[in-house]
Length: 488
Ligand SMILES: Cc1cc2nc3c(=O)[nH]c(=O)nc-3n(C[C@H](O)[C@H](O)[C@H](O)COP(=O)(O)OP(=O)(O)OC[C@H]3O[C@@H](n4cnc5c(N)ncnc54)[C@H](O)[C@@H]3O)c2cc1C
Image (cartoon, rainbow, N blue to C red; front, top):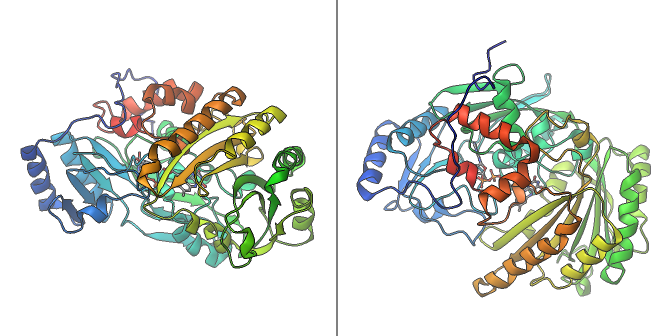
């Protein structure tokens, strides 16, 4: 067993993490020197402000984000990442790391600094015998599922196929089958990471365990992860699920019945409830499109059949529905079913609470705030944790909310920039109104925009904050990636 170079015996230099948007701004001359040096050694694309692809390369999923980095280093592989880290160490620009570009706060891009962009690193190799997949950090969930499903295997991923595996896994990773198989980070067997000293490290439970601990749920600001090795679980190609649309007039009643049904749901079932508008889907009568509804969803983490039908039944029987679309679907179709509802370039803001209970009062508050939503694209999602998520020990990984029963996220979506203030204001106010019901934590992957970094760290990492800071400081004593850690 290798010695853990991030072990607690060290006395690391204290690194103060910089708040959103701050850091070393490159002068024109320094930016040019960095660009020239990188060009001489890089195999991928070096995209500066004069490059014809600059605007496309700096754009992220959230159209609210309009940052202008000095340079984007679009890496072709680990050697490029090592080069980018080397020049960053020498010139000390503000550094941000981009995987799938889906973080709502746009933390994958920065103003006037260097973006280490992994989005072209798309390799996936599945070993069906060992039931593992090695995926590079630019892969999206849709791309990974496509490969693993060739063998009817899956690792629990996010609910939108266009989201990057990297940011999602490093922050924890909620998904449709998490109660059966755990968070995405729980299936990571090992990962390859380039740390601030330029070293390429393979970390796992056996090798550099402290870094492995931190990367699972606290993975920002430790280095640049170049690939993940995931354990795979037998699932698909078809899965059984519930999707029932209830009339909005019965929202509180359905929510209460749904909450009660979550208490007895087996671990194989992952229930989720959304207050949202009816999708403009040809399978649904047109007169219902875009009207308010309660969507009850649940997925069975096993083979379809009688056991699945029985386990899912309580989620399906919560009163007379508007529409019942439950049934069996290909896993890849399930994983991409809602992707079209979150198009690239529109405007978004998300913020969440963990909750141990969903009291009747909390339910009334949710419904009251949902009914004030600014646009039909805005929604409130209640996810059920527990099961395999809660079976992982509280200190086994940096993810700090193992015992929470629910996560409630308020997701504003809109198109018109004139609505920025209204939409963000609605989401913040709804989040504030729910705060008194929260168990005190928030989820890194759904963390707002321009939040106070200190406050956020406490809410995200709880009792793990100090250990995580220690680990970050041990591997990045000069704070090269500190701004990346400080931004949600
Ligand atoms: C439409 C949508 C749906 C979502 N659904 C889910 C869901 O179902 N479950 C869930 O848990 N979350 C979900 N999320 C949140 C998602 O997990 C986060 O936004 C996550 O950060 C996205 O990862 P990314 O690689 O696409 O993001 P990026 O914006 O590329 O990265 C976000 C941050 O992660 C860090 N990072 C990214 N790549 C690396 C790397 N290779 N090495 C080191 N650090 C890195 C960086 O600090 C970066 O700033 C969703 C987000 C969106 C927009």
